[in-house]
Length: 446
View 1 (cartoon, rainbow, N blue to C red):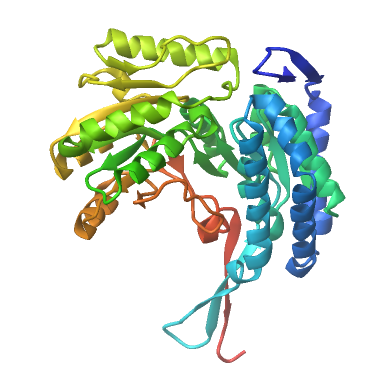
View 2 (cartoon, one colour):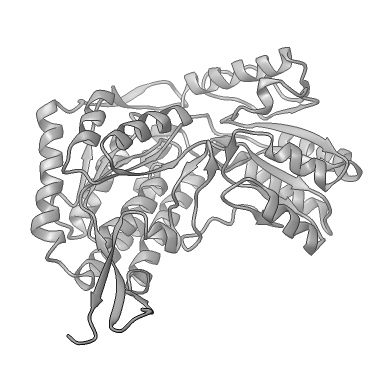
């Protein structure tokens, strides 16, 4: 069921009908027609102004758009406005830099003649997007691909039917033709049929590890390019700092943004012995002062509670917090002394739960940090440049942020390794995922 269910009240505010098979087929046909009749004949110079219109609409309607996701998945209004603004920044970045990002790449030939690689569109793409950042996740997929000339079919989370419809309307208002950005309310079986459809040329998924395995398998069976941005269990390593309060502040922001429902949030705090007690004490005091919004649903909060209780049963120490949810609300929980071999060390806690580990040195910190099936982001705080390089090279993650957190920006590629997925979004790398990198040569005698 696609519905707006307010996490703060549990009330079903709006319901949306799931598409019929015919409606899904027509959506794919519309994206394919637009790709052939508009994308293949339109120029980048004609698409850039349309994307600038998208930016203007997002900013003009930011309060309205923020209120939609506030009701859909519980995000605080302040964070919701921030997400709308960040999404607009992503669209603006690609509008501003599309020409340079899509410029031909000359190749120096060993023989005579000339050669270049041109970035050409692939065709209709399916984007399967999550509920935790309803606008931002779509922006980093749709922004570059619509400018490339691909068309986009959006299958959003069932919690986000109103925001997905709003985005479709925005692209139409901005001047994109019908079929350039198509929203569908589809079932799992219908999504599988879309992936198998030969008119669809690629798939991008942001979601759980389980969903990633399913979608990657289906895309692989159809020999289609797929990008998967999945879960994370990001380490936040503290070895040395000139300002412990600042490091704690970064940690608080990196853990509790979006009530901890963030794939690249700091989840495991790995602190050198000499700073551990002081850092943990300040982190606890800062956590006690927080007034968090509800999680996305009571079911999500209940699942997090089960994870915490399992960790406690396996021998973890409850440093702070209530392990039980109260409806969709879950207060900050801090765990420590998690035994080696406990499942909690390897799971993603998708909510306001922090794990703390005391380590003796950089070598042990790296070992603990890499002891996870995930490899999305990582954070390192150190005053030693050589130690920063040690971690930057040794951490098995797609991103390492040194002495900062919350540094996501439109120009910085985003993605992970291991069970956190493959492929990149945003920046120059995000512009290259769904293009035909076509070699074009000219003989010197021509």
